[in-house]
Length: 142
Image (cartoon, one colour):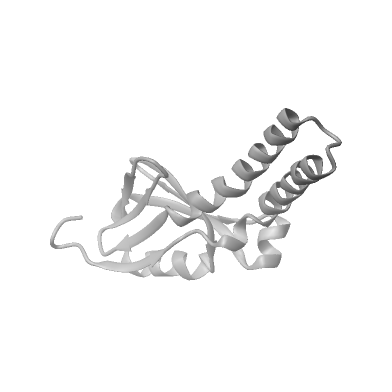
């Protein structure tokens, strides 16, 4: 970010965006734990199921916790990554189109995706709360 740029808005993906993944992960994790406790499965299979469930559970949480979107007076920036941080940005003046998408679950939870297309590429602000307000803020800065 250049010294002349000012952060106007900072948002992150909402934890509300991944309840389905959380539910599946909990189901798989509980299955693995039951397998261990009841010895229905042998130890190796139950451990594998438990590890998969924990991976499904922890992955979205880590990604959500390590992703941030900024709107500055010059750009829209996505910064994230679990092991290595990456940063991509689109210049506000080059933005051609913005579109809000939601599946039924996202609509019920009040989150959505803001897809932004610009001359240099595109980006999606995934699973953010109140994407309309973010879109409106970008439009006022453009």
